[in-house]
Image (cartoon, rainbow, N blue to C red; front, side):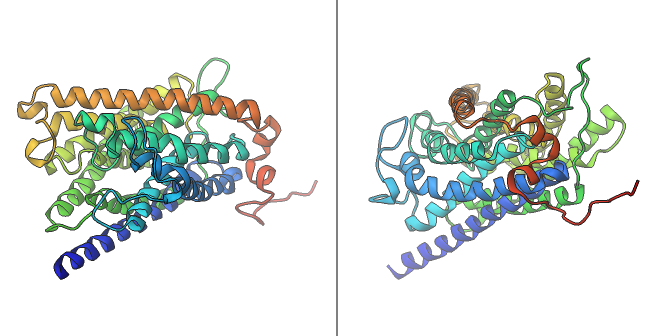
Length: 417
């Protein structure tokens, strides 16, 4: 009994440390998004990131955990509101498991902030943040991690390429389409104008924080220490995919546009991290390099595609999280090994299209559900409080207009006439 208690204690500490790392990713998201937008909207995007975790914490406590992990049906849980009568879905205390899952919930919600940056009404954002955290994200989480209908089909997503990133990425896509592009992004002839981010060093810091936090996101999803071998495998796969994604994005953008663009390289590493999140425990390290590398190429192509479609995503939320959430989900059906925990061998190991078909079904179901439900939520918000700020506010900047403060006060340059 003493050994069992010690193991539970060790597992609890490990999951809490991982939860703290995932929480720290909120700072990473904030720095990336702030760096990639204009200085006049920096305070606004950071406020949204800050309130995202506040909203996620309360919403996931009140409703989200019950919907995601409570006893219910294949669609959603129906017990454990406000954690009353709730039980842990892992061999650790409920409080530790809840905190880890709440941190994931906050990450999914904050992805959308970047795609809808620089023109979304702050009140509307708060409404969105609470609704996705307390209802939409938990329903999808129940399907896959809470014993729902996709789990019963042997759908696999170890750490959240589908649950977190695909959900957040497709919510960002539909929100960005409904919100429409920023003023001045596209010319009458259809050509796009580059609206440069104001602080690439800040964005770089954010990417490093996210990369660091991902060592809690993926390895922490073991929900226990075991003998340490699985944690080690997941950590190396996570790192290799990020490195490969950064390299391949740099090569791709260099060949396409003649310069090794730093911002695209950084998004390449994030794309590799998103792509390896689902298969991180089910593939060998060489496969992680391939998965991450393909993710790095995909993110560049997706950014170019969105510009051609006149979809204005200031930080690349959909190319990074949506596109590579899908790719990472499908990668299990190609590179996954039954001996490593997948129900069926992937395509290259002679498993045929069985697991790949299951993965495709799951990715399509989550994408369609997210687009329909979040599209309805955004339309409802638009009809009630208004989704977009006025043209005057957008031109002046949301920091002053929405929050009455500047991110960089005292730096104005005055000239006498």
